[in-house]
Length: 436
Ligand code: SF4
Ligand code: SF4
Image 1: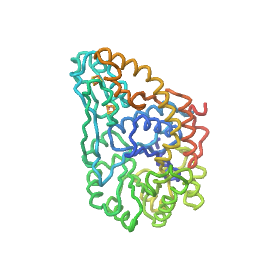
Image 2: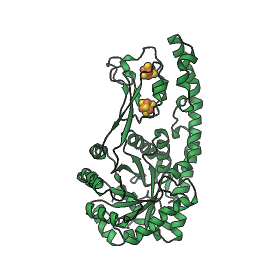
Image 3: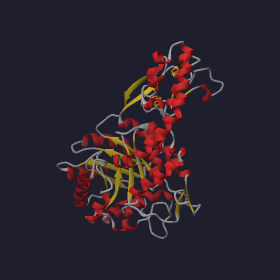
Image 4: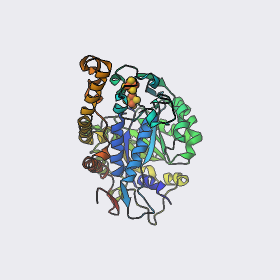
């Protein structure tokens, strides 16, 4: 038995917590902070968009979060959440990347582009091989760039451009999976059987490398028939299956009522007895778990569930190949977990805003100094040549890592935990610096 299975235990016991940093939200510094805070708060899974830059930042945040944790048992370090990547069967993802020719940069340029980039995607020869010719190999590291565009207006000689391109989910799957992600979620909708099958054909050869497959689908007429058809197409699976029921997408922060659609959808699918675990999303918020509990839709064990951090004692754990036996045992007779997106982000927004404010305070003098230096070197006045590069707060700020502001870090973890703890209680043997 290994730590590999702790998130799986959360599914089995009905206290699975997933953070969604999905395709609609790709501000890398905020994603990084959210991943750190919710990992330390005990999340089981982090779901991100299929963008290499987003995946890279999520991985780095998970690694950082792991360094903040400790357990009393050295043999069983803190179990990290699984990293899930979402793919849409009906859409080819668009990407935007910045690019420029570093050999054409004026030697006197103080490189404000490098300072402003929140993804450390702009590098110069000093960060590369010292034997490299000036400008060679320098520029935008494509896999880190997520197309935020901040670098474009800050360049005093307007030489940074952005380029858009399109990929297909099927073309992306091998690269994603070679990159070591734990789970894939396929977003589909009723009537997309052909598109789903095309995407599944690309995923299937890799499915043995995954710890989990999730399928996300919103409600609609003949939903259950559609889900059964999907199941018949992909079964048998060598890993667990989660049905993500998307009640009212991206609305959890709107108010109490937003959660009703997800809970109602959960009720409907639980009654259908589909093999697999059921997890709600779309409109989920602080009202979701109490509502599920009131309707007896949560596993009784979730009331006493500890976090997924510590090793199980003598309780057998379901290995992937045993999954279908467990499903036949009635795994789908309750809601196994909840995913939170916009609500989880809104909850931490005061912290994210404070981080931005610190970034602005730190960067303002530096940005002004840079602007003055550039204005002097170009012989122009600061107002005529560089004012556009200082036009917005976002462009003037520097990204501050959550770990650089420890008070905010632990405040964020406390807020995140207020959401996670609705599904889990915390085992006192698991300690993080929150408890020290
Ligand atoms: S600042 Fe430029 S290089 Fe950096 S992520 Fe944004 S678009 Fe890409
Ligand atoms: S700001 Fe423009 S000119 Fe200066 S280093 Fe960056 S890309 Fe080159």
